[in-house]
Image 1: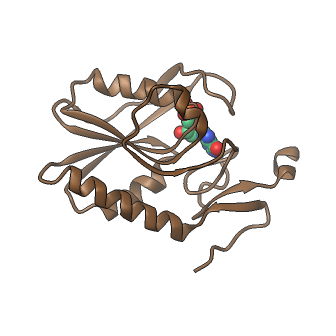
Image 2: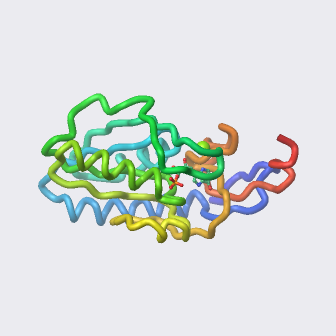
Image 3: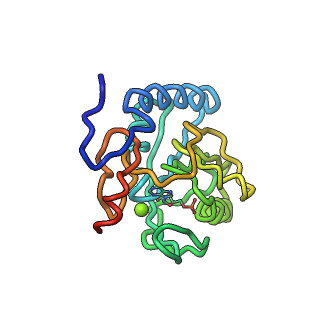
Length: 184
Ligand code: IMP
Ligand code: MG
């Protein structure tokens, strides 16, 4: 099935079918690695909502889900790595197997902060699963155990990712037409 693509989209980078296939593949790997254990999926609002919902349903191991909201100081298009917690997890992560679920790893600065933060809470283990990874992520030493797609260093929208809080609902990941940025 091909995606219905709104006129503001220049190009589809990853279709909804490709996402679904990849999520199934990642879930199979996670199922195998965590067999016999329960995993706590930790997502960062709001970008991780789609991958969290799809991954949780694709897994067969028992999971629980926690969400965190953070704000990264810096401009809207670049991250400083200085992070403020707007909403913390509701439950303790001590002695749990934590899997941080990410939409995209860009500079990786927010994520390295998040990993340090999770590890300081004394979990049994911490790993990262990200649907998308940009080349910049390689600059920060950051173990990402499960990666869906390596994409170019371009600003993308859809499947949880926004531009000015729009386009999160698109079922695919795509590039916006330049005039969309120009007019807002
Ligand atoms: P970083 O890895 O610290 O640079 O921050 C990554 C966060 O910035 C992601 O979780 C997204 O919320 C946001 N972000 C990074 N790249 C994009 C993009 O291409 N489109 C939309 N949001 C993005
Ligand atoms: Mg955003």
